[in-house]
Length: 120
Image 1 (tube, rainbow, N blue to C red):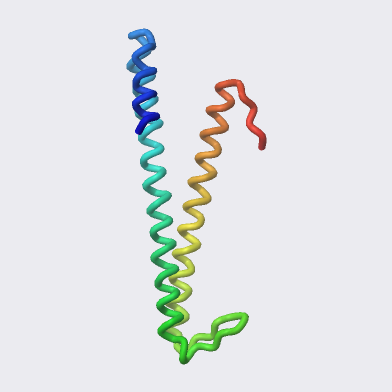
Image 2 (cartoon, rainbow, N blue to C red):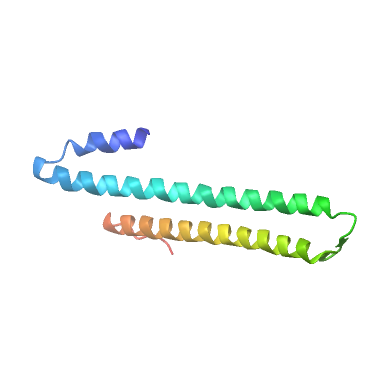
C-alpha cells in the first residue's frame, strides 16, 4: 500500500505532541476503508452467487417454464428460489449503494475541511 507508507512518512513530520492523535485518526480512517472494502466485495460476491444460482435455475427448468416478458415457473419451489435469489441481489445492491453514499459523504466532509466545496 504505497499511500499508507506515504501517510506514515508524513506523520513523522508532525510535532511529537500531535503525533499520537494524528496517528490514531489515520489508523481509524484506514481501518474504516478496509472494513468498507471487505463489505463491498462481500456484497459483490453475494450478488454473483445469487446471479449464478438464477442462471442454474433457469437452465434446470428450461423445459417446464414459460419464458416471455415474464418467467412463469411450473413449480412453486422454483418461483420461491427465484424470488429468494432476487432478494439477495437486491440486498447486495443496497449494501453497495449504502457503501458508496457513505464514501461520498466522507469524501465531501474531507474536502470541506480542506476548503474545497464539492459539487452536489
